[in-house]
Length: 357
Image 1 (tube, rainbow, N blue to C red):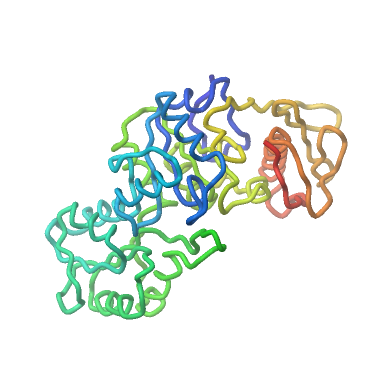
Image 2: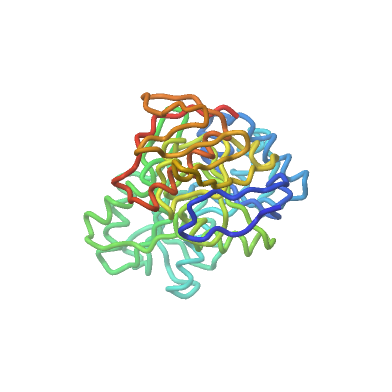
């Protein structure tokens, strides 16, 4: 079994002889784009999550969504046939409330630009939620909710320009839905920042604190983060020293993964949450007269003269390509090594990839 934490500049994937649900003792699972996509189901999500639980893995659902109360999240997971309890939910609202507690004392008045999930989290941390900037709040905490409107955001702006601390539950620019990408909290936070000229404190992903707090609450000593976004889920996990499993059911594509910067790189790759229930081949680097190549399972890849070449000699030069899961893993290792050695400007052309599991 191989289950180490990733180093910040690691160019290769990790491998595990055991299914990840046995190699690690707690999964820190993203929600949107991993367990579901808006109101749409994600194929294999229920089998993957429930199967991991049945293997004895602890679960913590760690989400940048600050609008939903824990029971609401549990109910939505249940509609997707995923078992959970409220104590397993750790949201960006909870993280922001804990972050705020490091700056102002409990009992301080706080204005919410957000929904009931955020109000509940702040109340649970002992803050007094107020309704108006005229109540002289010590802080404004802003989190995504469909009810956030011009009046609510303007009230937040009045308080921030009046001296209140501005805290964002997360800085996600977009939110995945079944129709595409909608405005995320980061885009709404940017409006208040633009008007006030003041940068906010920010919780949630990609900051490592949300993973550290979720892990402390869930327990366990061998955590695995699971996510679909490189720039939030995996940046945060790597910053926290936690290996990540990336799935292709949400935002970041296989092409994005292959061209990822070191700080964004996952430790394991799969198309979906079946990746929790399967072993992962250990990538192997070999050197011959043509330079280095990478093997993952039954597939091998190298970068030759700036072009990614698979083991059958086929160069990935088309606009689109369909490759196996092992070829995807080998390709990522080969391109990551090339980028680390030669820099981002030397990146080989990588087509849009369809990955067969």
